[in-house]
Length: 291
Image 1: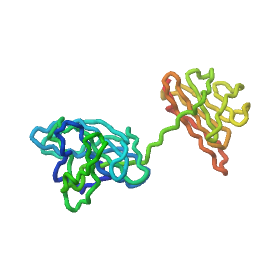
Image 2 (image 1 turned 90 degrees about the vertical axis):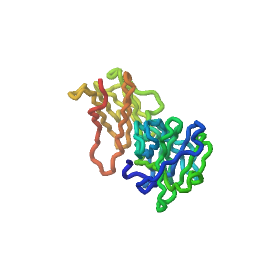
Image 3 (image 1 turned 60 degrees about the vertical axis):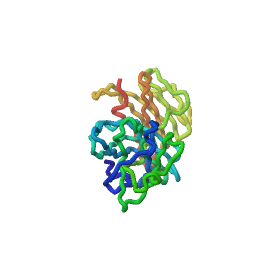
Image 4 (image 1 turned 120 degrees about the vertical axis):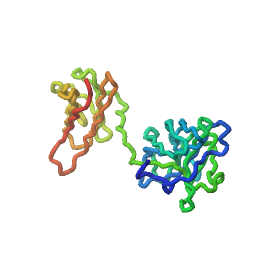
């Protein structure tokens, strides 16, 4: 139920609500402004409370949407389509949906989170609503044209103080950087692999021809002097090929290794060393690649 997340309700819902002109058959959208507890924050999960009326229950396909902050919802940040599954009539149920694929990040303020659905798919489904007079009125909007125009929900439902829409946030997920836009290094020792090395964020490593066996030797500032050694050993007892990386510099060094047959890329960051460091640490990745 999005425990520990962002919510505008008081924990109880007295009614269910929808977009007033629902019987036009067009997809309807309802959103509510939610605020993370810290920044930057990535929207990782939305929880939607569905109130099922009538006597039959059933299911309803719907789409979770997120819009940028503002006086009204701004640009669409992302969407995820899902289904409620089968719900019984007379129930109010939270459905949780992962929003990680949206990659919606909040740097300040809030974010509008909500749902888009066609009410004619199941006319017994409504969004839970908190009508308690002690609940602060949230910023809630509806749209009947995919967010091209918005209408304040309280204009249609003055008794509505907040919707059953909650969200979880987490620090943004950081993806590995892509390899440099440059020709990769190759070696006859490892015909199924390609390599990129970048030193100090700017200098691309180059191959050193006179290299020790079963090793990719990479030069930095001086073309004939290797600063980085890369080996791929195995398969080892756990069934994996193990990339081994050693550097002979004190600066930040990045290494990308791509397995040609699969397209898989592993990224390794060897950070700059502290001024008082007396070691040159390397990397051994024991689950690097499958043969």
